[in-house]
Amino acid sequence: MSAKLGCNVRGLNKKAASAPKAVARTVKAAAASGEVPDMGKRNVMNLLLVGAIGLPATSLVGGYAYFFVPPSAGGGGAGQPAKDKNGNDVKSKEWLKTHLAGDRTLSQGLKGDATYIIVKDDGTIENYGLNAVCTHLGCVVPWNKAENKFKCPCHGSQYNNEGKVIRGPAPLSLALAHANINEADVVVFSPWTETDFRTGLEPWWK
Image (cartoon, rainbow, N blue to C red; front, top):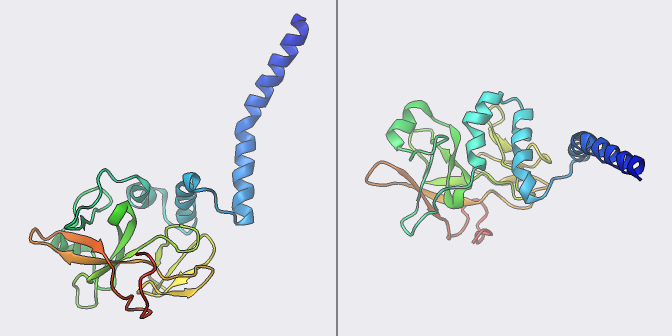
């Protein structure tokens, strides 16, 4: 009896030791097949995918990684102050010192979603922001400055510099948010409920 019990224990220990390897194989298989994990795992996959397109690990930790942390507070009726990668309010004058014409950089926006602040050609902040969540399966879409468009690393969807979808499988354009500067010089996002100027249609995200 004791010998049989000992064999069972050794068998369980062997299975436990091999579990991490099995998990690693599963993750690799999912990545190879192009499958996107459920919402609970998708944030981790987003980080891996963003890293895969050339961002150094330090940039992930200091930049994109921030946008996968749940926000500490939601926006009120007056709008949601944009937050930078350190969780501080984005002040337009300070922001524009380091973000030049044509820049599109992530901030934390409405409902904690990663949202691009856009700098216009005249060096001022555009009056709308772009929700960075891909309309296909929810990956965060990086800005490709060299090609002047947004390219999703998950399944290849593309959006022009205004966030309008130009290549599938994403079915819809990136969601818009109003971006205004308040009396404290803070960039504030508020819901966009009017017609989508890019398509002439009612906003799908309402």
